[in-house]
Image 1 (cartoon, helix red, strand yellow):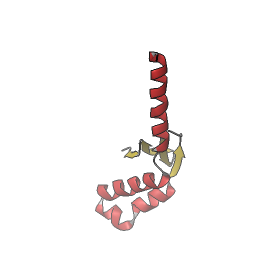
Image 2 (image 1 turned 120 degrees about the vertical axis):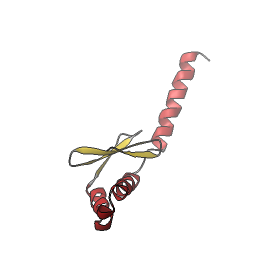
Image 3 (image 1 turned 90 degrees about the vertical axis):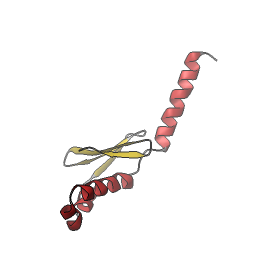
Image 4 (image 1 turned 135 degrees about the horizontal axis):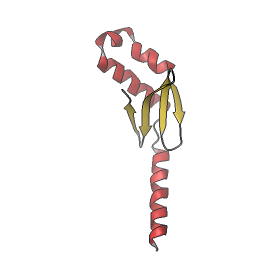
Length: 86
């Protein structure tokens, strides 16, 4: 096989893996809840994380995803992992 075909197959496999492991909306909401709870005990007691997670809007790009609150990206996810943007 030529190098270009091998490269194309590898890229296709990586994209397929990314699409299959794209985090769900629930995973993004859980990450928001956990991040708020870790930041402040008072916010955890009052349920600020739950409210923020509820107000978030999940958007999927097929191979990656993110969630937005008040026109601000708060989480980014890919390959089954979600990162909270601080």
